[in-house]
Image (cartoon, rainbow, N blue to C red):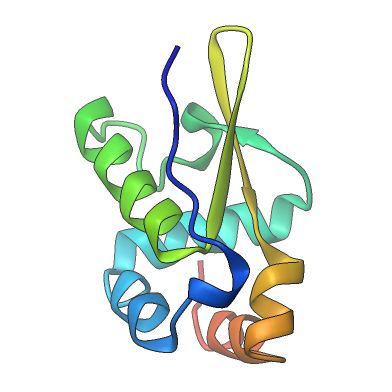
Length: 104
């Protein structure tokens, strides 16, 4: 079974978050997760329906390794959620403010 790397709360850095959100597709994925309010599988967060799975997996890996997204295995699906509590604890109001400037 695949093991996913998730940085500890204290290891999440502003530079890494901003770099991850610098790509328009990744910010679209984060916004979809933010608006969903619950865990979503990979297909539900894809910003465009024809995106190759390998590309989506790479974007989710970058978001996960930056500390923005948590991925848990549930059966055959990978369920992704925003690490709201961790991001808010490290950088209060940051993610909500950034997402307020992005229109889906």
